[in-house]
Length: 256
Image 1 (cartoon, one colour):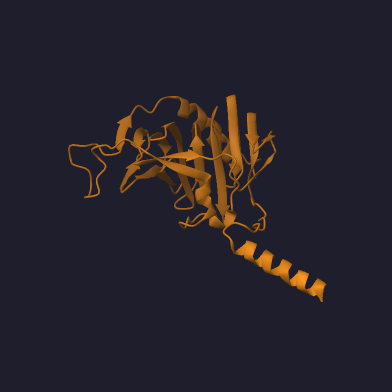
Image 2: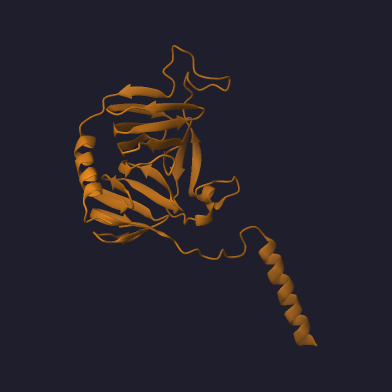
């Protein structure tokens, strides 16, 4: 009788603990492979050094150090992380979401529309092309991102405003809200690519306020005399060199 009572008490206590928020362990999900490393120097996935041929899984934190570089082949897409950069690639079905946490990322993708979305800070970028989309996104500060486009177009959205960035141009894009990332966060893959307010995804970062600009207004579009969050800048030459590498990799018949 006493053993039955003790078992009942243990059951009640276990049930009570599981009712508490986040008290019970979440069953781990099997991460889906999103691609493979086609070139690496001083680069890591999580805490592991990677080299050519290494598999990249959905949600892996990809990082490069000083003089580092990481090139990832993901289906019909190629990504290159420059030195001192970090990003995660997520896949849900045929859709990929890339989150650039810091540094610079170049992309080349065939025939993309809404199936590739890139985030840098609180800014959303969607490359579009029926042929080949090529560009580069670089984080300057928590509130400022530079986007350069060589082929295709790039739809940039900051706050309530959007702009189509044309080939051969580059823009400084300002964010209303900055983002600080938590590199130790482990993704819960079911949160992607949609992010409900109660999703565990929001544990991956915190938000910080950016300085208020004349373009930020709850009353509607920015005034006609203001450039808004988009300011055209010089495109530079670094992306042109990276593009040659990316395009050759995509067009190589030896690549999967």
